[in-house]
Length: 452
Ligand code: MN
Image 1 (spheres, helix red, strand yellow):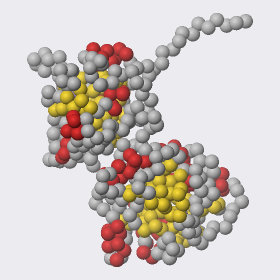
Image 2: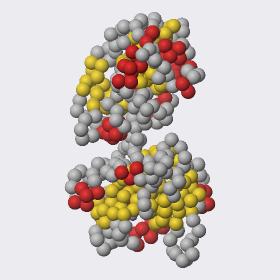
Image 3: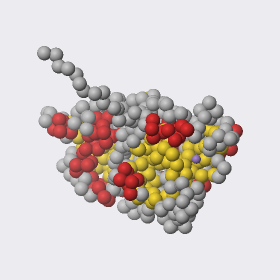
Image 4: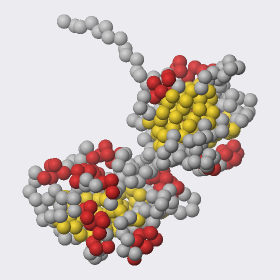
């Protein structure tokens, strides 16, 4: 018997929120302004995105836009964000904006609503425990992970002014955390260039230079706006669960003999990182390439030529004792005060015999669980490496041995972030390639130089 289909067409949740954007559209004449009408489909993102647009209108201000339910909740922050928790900044609630607005950089014609120059001043991702509730309550706590702004923030709604003004005013306040800066309220605003095009306000106003790189309307998800190179989150975390050869599987196979030493794979230098897909981009470390080998709790740390330098890195060797039998490729690095690798610091530490501040950054797994991993694709080797470190090092808090995260998209963006952080450059590696003890085109190094 044919069943009558009575089910109504379900409304798609992410439909471009027409009603929510009515105000936005009513204020603009899209025949005149180049601003988006909000008709370009924007791919859903697993992480909520944010954008801050510096807007040189009647009065200069910074428009903070937080992605929520398919639109950008928006505030005009009159004096711009401040990193000083004591410095509360007025944020005037404005109409919801379409998501493709986040890629708009250019000039709104004079006489039009918001006439003036718009720059993509910052962008990235934001998180909040319960943003809907926070907005409703007028107390929205959130965390920003952008190129310029980071850490915890809060937007607090004020009572409507006595004048009975139509505007809803909020205060944007930095929470006290590592990203806060006391008494340096406007320091962050000194970072004046566009994060999307590198242009100044003047260049945008004059229509000079390259246009912005898309973020909201990018074909593929962009690398995280800030390439945080020692984080344990990110794309690789996802890869960890999809490894073809997993540590667990390897353990059930017949064991092989672990080599004493494996010659390192070397990079080929190039002007720019490869732009295609299938690459993982890692931060280039300014330290000593070291191979870590553990056999029955006995640790050796060898240079790329195979010299035994274990005695030079006692703290790392002690931590490595916690690992099961394995061979890991990595780099020993000293960090400067800002967390950037510091070669001079490394040399000083070695000559003073004060090597406790040195860190082994682990980026490849050559042998583990009784098996040679070199023929496995990099993705699987790194997934197994991350798992191995996570499972065996109890004292991770000490940070002697850290997993090196990689970014799978936007080599240029990762390089730019690295250069901004005063790092040396990046290494791009083919994700499907095996490990080879020679110089290959599967590993490409690109360095920061003037212009990045
Ligand atoms: Mn504005």
